Image (cartoon, rainbow, N blue to C red; front, side):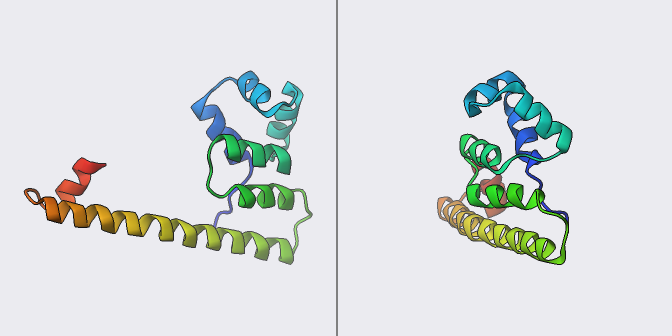
Length: 124
């Protein structure tokens, strides 16, 4: 299983707004802070948390934990914690997504006309 990395938040932010200067201003950090993070391939916990907040990521605390763990030396304990974070994030995603899918399909059946899947596709 591939673990999430804090640098993925920076890539996501730069995909949304390509200006690194913009994100430095939003985060209140110097340009060198993000340049060093890119070079190291990881964010500090505070930058990761604030980027997650600015990107409206639902798992802000997990991103902070991931960034903190990335600074730790590799160990069995670190690997188990990262694995647990990923499992919990996956479970939370399912809890949020499945009820919405069921509600949408139920709405599509009630509306009628098209098949539920075709109606689902038109709603999203």
